[in-house]
Image 1: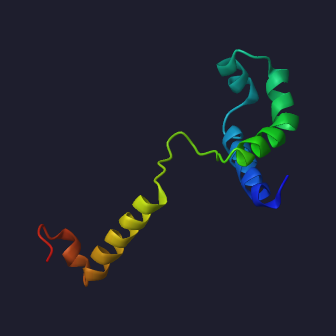
Image 2 (image 1 turned 60 degrees about the horizontal axis):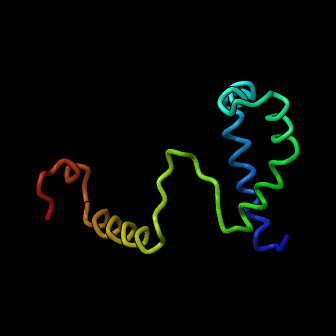
Length: 100
């Protein structure tokens, strides 16, 4: 695998492992209508390959509750936040209804 995709593949795999640790393999198997051994085989063998496959396809894994924004939207949100936070001088200003 080309180096440019290797880091994303590692991140994909890490996210899956951390998430899967929160629930049991048995629960995953039930959700998939699969056997425990199928889930175990995936976690212990195929996961690295699928993580690499997704990275090379230009994809990344994120939790279902994550919200992703295109870079231009994120940059605009950051600029807006920086502008408004820089105007706050005291904690009391956070409670004002109509900031200047």
